[in-house]
Length: 448
Image 1 (tube, rainbow, N blue to C red):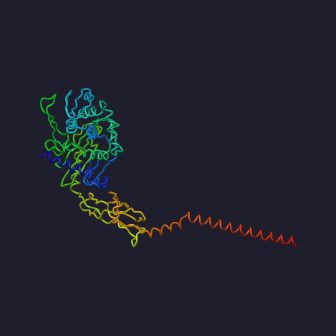
Image 2: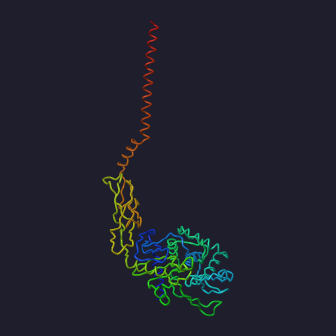
Image 3: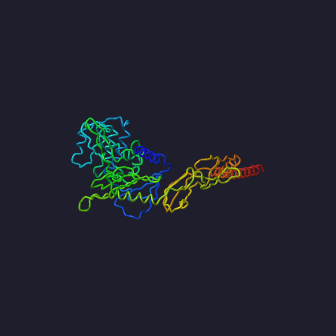
């Protein structure tokens, strides 16, 4: 039953990711509580609306949140995740010696499927599993795999992201932002297995060639596990990935679903050590995330702002008989997340249209756009299309062609040249005739 529920939630989230018709919009409302995290982004996945941001474009170390991108690259380059067996190499895992890495306990020479390794990487945050996957996909070259990670980040539109390794251990050139992580995670949620793997509280590795007994791995995400989560536990949270080291602080990317609403929250840089270098045990990123989810679920509601086909404006129409205006309607309906006490009519619709359009025009042709805004912040831009088809009047069109010819600059220039030449001709003719008369007078005088 639990697996079916996780699968259903995965489908709902993936559908929201794949079929959202508009790019992410921003409303960025204010909260009435303090946050521990240095950078935060909270997005309503149902409408792709950012409802809260704090330093969302500031470069931050993501620690093990990095493994979301590792999952993406590995899963896209291994065609059969459940059927591809990979052997753990001692020399690969030994590269983590002395790094105080979080490990999944995989063993030298152990044969595991790619999917098992992805579980080992994401559930207990195994750096060893991430290295094995990177080595395999990179053909024995982990740097090649990291290059793939950076190329994928660029492909996803990340502008402030650069990876140096597949696990997230400290490196000054290893960074991303809350907003870039939203883009990365949103994409990852559309991939097979991702939400299923990252929503697990426990994962059991079956017997292998190096282990006679199954092994149980425990999630590092206290928000999804009531047995170890304590006050951090929030029943509506689903995944996704934790991360921490002294330089990065505590980090968390998660989703939450309640009453048909879904949110994704990125929280980075909650302090892990104090000013004296003492370890901080309190997970500020989880406290922040829980508060933000509660705030969002309590205060926001999806509201329809524009219905598909709703009349939004009109534009001057040329070349149509007995019709000088064309009605414009919304190409698609648009809904957004708004405070519960704010009416949808509070959203301002500002059309951007040409001065006129010319017939013929077909119903559904895009004529202009409209910007939707609330509280001086743009929410989205939608297309405005023709509400009907209109044929061209050939008489009006021909009359306009004639008018345009006779009023065109070139026509006036040509007429001016002709007039000028005519004047010159008349002057020359006058002078010529005058000269002829004078010559006749001279001849007449000589004969006399």
